Length: 564
Image (cartoon, rainbow, N blue to C red; front, side, top):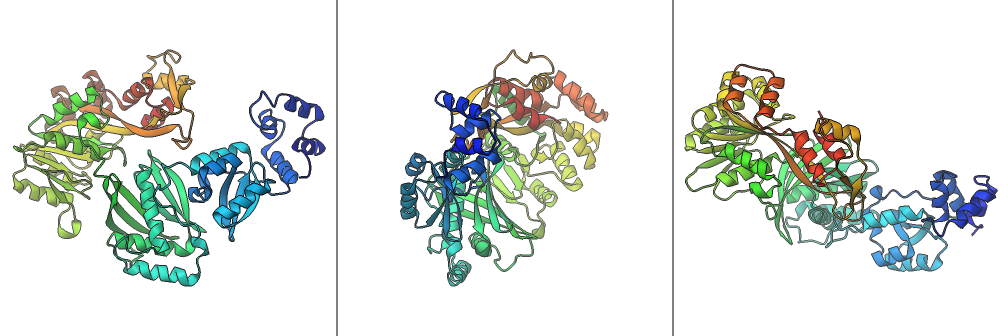
């Protein structure tokens, strides 16, 4: 070593000797190492500290960003060993493993790391907090497959081996029939997604590597990268599993993968689209085994359940569920259908695609190529003597008018629209060419919903109140300091986000006689909202605020998800 850190900083003129002695005197009581203490006091910058550490240990300094490190690289070392030695693998480059350490002069740790990993180790110095954070992320089982670890030596495979793997991928029909590296890699991505409880997998072609991200609790998180030279083989493998055309890469394609998991069968809806960098793949997880479609078990409050049951108990009319993509509309509709599913009723759905199969319900896959778009399929369903009809989405004039006609002729029809709130559904139907008179006569109610991230129970703590947000969400009815609100500090279980899981909130507008009259007269949305609130509708922002007061989510999450 070139000397002590404090002496180097003094020599460089970054701090005075008095400042050094003061920091050393409080090091025992003040948490953290000397460099961290000096930074906290504002005496040195990160760049100055990094340069001094590099001089002290005579190795490069690296600022470690846990979110961009491949967790599979981190796991090249056993967790107890890595945490005990404060050493985290961060990168493999040119056959060498870059090991971030707080003490890069520890020759014993470097030697053992080389024996364990099989790589030549190049040590770099990093901050204590950065190393700990990288270890927390890297060893979190929510984003890394428990059963299969990706072979991170893929980049070192010879070209001949890569060609061989690619040829195998083109012919193999089953996931377990080969030990080809690409096959194992794809299986690890799927397994990791299932273990992470994520909703979507994104494989995005970029230079120099393909990025793999999981959407967990509504937010995308990078979990690994794939070397550019095997990108096509990975995409080809996914296409084979999804029964898609492996030779076509210039047009979008859709497919489906079904795999066995420890908790049952899981389906993946696969979508590919060509981009300037290559083919982008998105896979939506459809876990039939863990999905429960019951109004009382999908996160609704007693008030919401009661309101929904009032709507679906009506013999005919139209119920619209609205919200952005990924807000849980399909789950809500499936829960309604489950509640309506009786031997005495003929229930028929038309969906694009059919995401979950419901026993006792006749589900039709919408397919424009075969004349079964939503509008046409709805016309055919009307000849099937239905009692209840579910249309996946009302997206054009023909579907809208046919749906309203079905609701007016003695059928209960449930569908979705893309609007920001419940009241806006009326204007949207008008935009699609439905007369206000027919809308008022057909519409039973509108349900708007959002999914809010829930506070992680493992690191939940009281939060400072944001007075302006509280005032806006409560309409000035709650004093900013009258309630104790909470937030997640960030821990291993929640990947440092402070959130774990999601909870739904609902805005349910009942179309009462007064509301129907207002719709038929073409009153503006502001007047419709006044009537709805006067008749008991709880707005999305108020529903979210109630969840924040109950300590289930944060004020910030409610504000940004419900503010227009």
